[in-house]
Amino acid sequence: MAQRRLELTTITFNTVVSACNKGGAWEKALHVFSAMVQSKSELDAITSNAAIGACKTGCYWAKALQLFQLMKQSNIQLTTIGFHSAISACAKATQWE
Image (tube, rainbow, N blue to C red; front, side):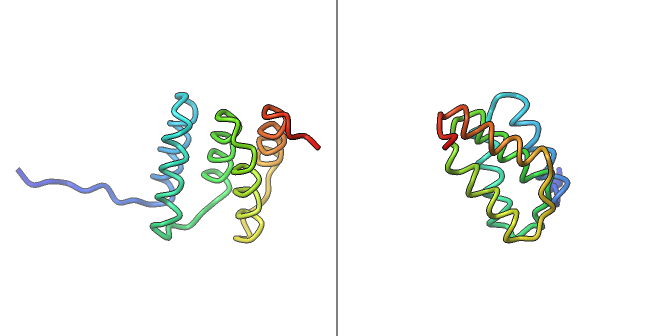
């Protein structure tokens, strides 16, 4: 039987990162996001926001801020969701100052 390969597109990564994050697998969401960056797929606000949300869940405030900075450097539209997730990650880890 012939094997079929899934084409890894931005939409594919968006779906997987978001599903992992919503399913409580925040570490896996960050791993998939890292794979997306390494694959040179086009980053967008959806995937970036989901990755920042995963950082919030895992109390990785520094990583959340790093991803937020990556969004700015990559000219990805900064959204209310991204701002909120980054602030919440800091607050959850008591790094609000």
